[in-house]
Length: 415
Image 1 (cartoon, one colour):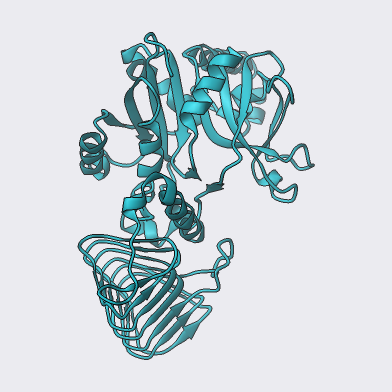
Image 2 (spheres, rainbow, N blue to C red; image 1 turned 60 degrees about the vertical axis):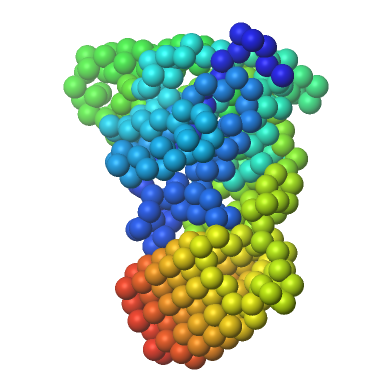
């Protein structure tokens, strides 16, 4: 456990200036960090993990969304977890490290001894207390959560090499063209406040270089496309890579699950991972039923208390049903997210799909994907207020909001 001198602040990055364009059409309705995975907003999972850190005094959410979009959620999660959560809005892109530095005065208000930095679109078990203990043992400036992945997929992430005995970070390269290591950066960090000095040093160095370039207007013109703003500092290329091998950075390896939530397909996969985690962390959130007085439940299923599910329905595995959904007689749901106010009528099938808010699926209809979470049409997505009429099949398709389908479609994007 932490000593009495420890004070920990957590910073969760919730979204860049693109505001989840790859997550459309689901991010047309809500900010991506508030999209529900396993019945809880995406941001809820890292926030609730932070709650388990000893001596946590504050959680900050940092992003580009309007404050009003997060106000209600921030208020409710602060009350629920009994930890102050504040939203800080970035005025312009500062980079992953620059965004942290931009709010250094706020972050340091509580005089923390340690600062966690997490990314909201990371899905994992967030072993933060264990990571903090390892960080204190190492005695460095920062500790990075890492995981072993397949050699084929490693180059999509930041690859790193660590000392097998001391766990010191010896080499780091972001998305390399040639294979470096099957250990990758998970986007979860713990730092001492010294991190701010290193970010400041990068900014000062960049400003000095910019001033030197101004000596020659021709040279300035030549380098204009390459020059980053002085206050734009990337954590990976500008901080991690230069500080390797200096006994400042260390790694903590997780053997548990880890994914990045960039697309709707990955949200369905990550919803399944969180549902399976509930078995150990929050079994009360999982539904049960044998088909007598309530629906037959198979595997891990979340059903919001306000949802109405017919006793003859068969639900699961990997199903999340949100508020005020109505699931009719004989309905079969497998590997899907059903959002608020959806109606699914008698004997319909939903498989490998996300059904958007206020949508309706008719009797004997089929809404189905193939279950490839990485493929563009690997899961079927219905946007908000989509009506699928009776006996219509929607297969491996994406349907944007406010559409009515009275004919079957396959492998289509309906705009």
